[in-house]
Image (cartoon, rainbow, N blue to C red; front, side, top):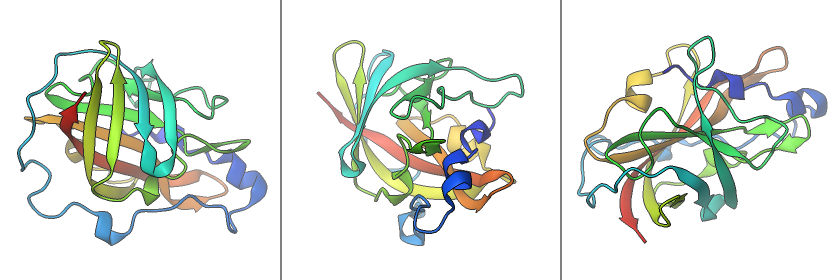
Length: 197
C-alpha cells in the first residue's frame, strides 16, 4: 500500500491563505521512543469485525467510518472530500482490534475549511482512540507516537507493515504546504490496543 497522498490537496488553505490557519504538526517530543513500536504488553487480539466509528476525545473527533480500497495508482483511496466529518478504514486489511496493523485515514481540510483530522498533528502520546465495531464492542487504543513524514521517502513498512499485536495507524495530510501542490507529506498516529469494552 502506498501513502495516502490523495488526502493532501489543501483547497481551503489555497483560498484562505496559511496565516493563522495551518493545522498543528507533531513536535519531536511526540515521536516514537526507541523500542516502543513493537514492545510492551497488549491484551488479547479481538476477533475480526468491521469498524463503524472512530472517536478521539482529546481532539474532539467523533466520526463515522467508511470502507476504503486502493486507487488506480495503488495508493490508499480517501473518503469523499465534501463530507468533512467522515473517515475511512482500509477494508482489505486488518480490522481495528485484531492482530496486525489497521489503517484509518481522513482529510485534514476541504474547500470549506477544517475536516475530520484537522487537529490530528496536535494529538499527544498517551491519548486514547476509541473504535466502535460492528460486533457492538469498542476497541481502545493508546497513542505511542505521532510523526510527520515527507511524501518522498515515506516509510511504508514502518507505517503499514505487519505487526504481532493489534496496532492502529491514523493518517492525514501534514508537513510543508505549497499553494501549487498542497501538503507535502502525512501526519501518522501510531497506537496499539490497550483495552476493549
